[in-house]
Amino acid sequence: MHYQNRTGAARFLATSLATAVLAVSLGGCLSSGGGGGGGGSTTPAPNPLQVSTQQGDYIGIEEAGMRVYRGIRYGVAERFASPEFPPAHEEAVQLSEAFGSACPQNASPFGEASVDEDCLFLNVYSPEEPGDYPVMVWIHGGAFIYGSGGASYDPRHLVERGVVVVTLNYRLGALGFLPHAALGNANFGLQDQQLALRWVQENIAAFDGDPDNVTIFGESAGGHSVMSQIASPAAEGLFHKAIIQSGAYNGTQLPLAAGQYAFARETLAQLGCTTADDLLSCLRSQTVEDILAAQAGNYLPVTGTPTLPVSIIEALATGEFNKVPVMSGSNLEEGSLFTLLALADEDDALRVVLAPGVSDTIKDASYASSVATLLEENPALDTQQIASDYLARFATLPAPDKYIAAHAAIGTDWRFNCPNSTQWELLKDQVPTWGYWFTERNAPALPGLAAPFPLGATHTAEIQFVLSSNETLTERGATEDHLALAEHMASYWTNFARYGDDPAIGPNGTDGSGSLPAWDPVSDAGFVNNLVAPTPTASSKAAFDIAHQCGYWNAPPVLPEEDVLPQ
Image 1: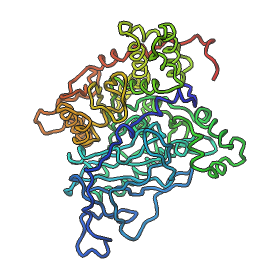
Image 2: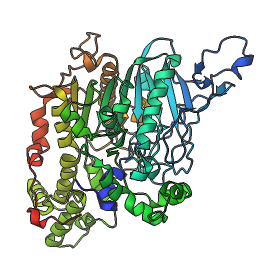
Image 3: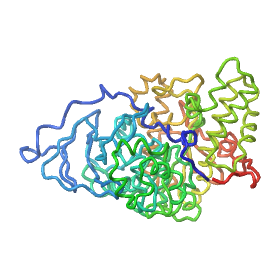
Image 4: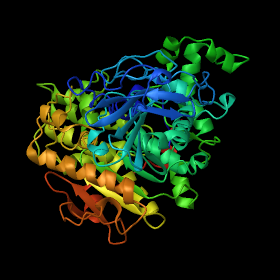
């Protein structure tokens, strides 16, 4: 596939929103202390909140029934260089409610701006009682340009079920993923994630985590990161299970040369580095602000690098990947979020369908133009035919509903759900694989997403059922049924972390109560778990494929070869 550095083409990822839509104040949830007094060297009795790592001692705080360690620096890195562990410190570091700085990113509705390149921090949340707990490492989403592992995520539902949760920052945007042959490995953000996982291997036992039972999980760009780590030889042995939430998109990724053209060409031109004799020196001489202003609207990890020699799809198809149990899935209406964003974009033609007094002919043309923008990364697709085919599915709806529904369905099926189905097929005969389909259309409203149409089970809507507290869900309007679904999902996620290497148990657990509906692995029978309030139900993969037109997308309408413009 071809990728362009155009705002319209990049929008689907640039608003991956995992940080934004979950960013709510955790005021009232935070404790002012509990760490006890001062440095370890003067404490007369052992401090149960003090831990020793390879880099030195840290003193955490007590909060919401957890031992919490925010803002641990796991790495340092020179700009456009591989990260390293930080030097050790001698005095115990007293941690607090504060998170470490987010990695550089532009100000946006989706997260606070940052220009601090000293940003490789992680956070550890452990149960109060000592133990030997499975570890879950969360990789945040945000189009590889936004987000952090900070206050947007509240892991107490998971920790109270007996796991240690780690959240982390990694370099974003051009500073983390600018692809260019002169920069060598290029996928610095993936390298940061791997260094954090090495830190976990070396240190998590001090927090009562089991380094031999580590599950990585993430959503959107975070889920794509998880799949990239599955494909990365450099990540071998760093994790033992994987959960992918809405991260199956663009599994073919891009080779380094194509990525250089798509993601670096315009950035380097704006920075005046295109003709530099020493590209690295030129890039290191730029201000963070100038790099952020010049970077692309989204990024993907590129292939042909030591970190990622081949794409996700090639690795899965050849069987050359880190073979760990996988749980993955996507949402019923992933694309509705991006349709909402298109309607808010002054440059997107879809806005015309909301205008009063505009003829149906003009609305048809505007809708088709917006679909072409949505699909433009693949110039071989016959976007006019695809737009027409999908509009026909919703012809009985009045305008503008039919245009909105068709646009959202294309974004859902093409971008997320049919690639998810393909990856299930590639994985199921090689590793234990569980699939889910999040279909809760009445999920609590996500902050800042007032919409002129129902978003349904949209992109990111499932995160709050795993990484939000009951208090936060209730504040958003959750019903008792929603809280019941959150209980089920937290149990599935933590059971998978504990038992996922046993296909006979997996996300189901072993309590024998029957309160958790059975979740069978994906197999030739093709069952997936339909996550809906209050009680998940088994569904067939065939129903998933039919609902998302996956047969259509297996052989979509394409232009005659002579009509495909060179890119």
